[in-house]
Length: 367
Ligand code: TTP
Ligand code: MG
Image (cartoon, rainbow, N blue to C red; front, side, top):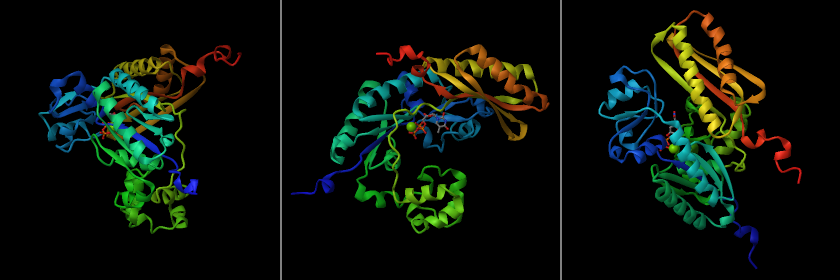
């Protein structure tokens, strides 16, 4: 008799991440863009524009362009690129369609951002079966949505996510449990969850550039250096991650911001730009039926000094008038500073999904 435990493959988790998502949607809408470098973000204004790149397609990446770089640097590296302003409603629509496809194939689906999701697929029973499913999903997204995705499969969320990024674009990487150490080892410590530029620098300063090097660190040593996060790092370096795929994930925030062409002390202009940001955020929030509890205004002064002010309401709101008056109240102390603004922005968080807004008797609890 064989041992059922030894035969059990344990957990199988998939992570799907769309390739250069905003740019890919634009290319789908306008096929003549294909093959050219396409950049989504602020207006480059012939190299004088002051915003940033949201994303760009892989042709543009060959010129060294990437997300979050100043649009002026992007323009210097690639003046012949096609520069487009983002059309968020189009991207949310495409995102919803992709999530619908994924939901049909998952035991549990956790959308983890506009263009990525985790799928619990343990019920498929084996890694080869999960691989077949991944191929099928990638094909459906291509055929039905004309978009390209990269997929990672592994024994948990951490490995699945790193695997989906392993061979972009259009990649499929399956990491079976036995292969986890050789897969993770050569990767930079920046691939681990929660390791941003600062922590990465800190770890590299301690002599840990690659994950295999981090294996030499003791858990106690990492705790001493990073507090509780140390344990998390120690576990991640070993490929350990027991977070469940969580279907209750909700988008954490919706925001818009605007960088002025020149730093400005014109409060009328700051008001009207903030108000336009509020309108766009409101439109996106209510398109999904969400309301929100927390409002945040972000102000960046000349010289890049950045501040946030935030308020949390007692009741969720979906009213544009509430958001507008809330944003203005938050802006007020900023304008008393008498300084010039470089950027103004608005976001909502603590989003409340539509089903939580229904009165109790409509939720089906009374049957
Ligand atoms: P990502 O998945 O990080 O990037 P991507 O899909 O464009 O490219 P990749 O093929 O490497 O996955 O982000 C998804 C979308 O989120 C992206 O298309 C645009 C948006 N985004 C921003 O607006 N600003 C940012 O800084 C980043 C990283 C993404
Ligand atoms: Mg992506």
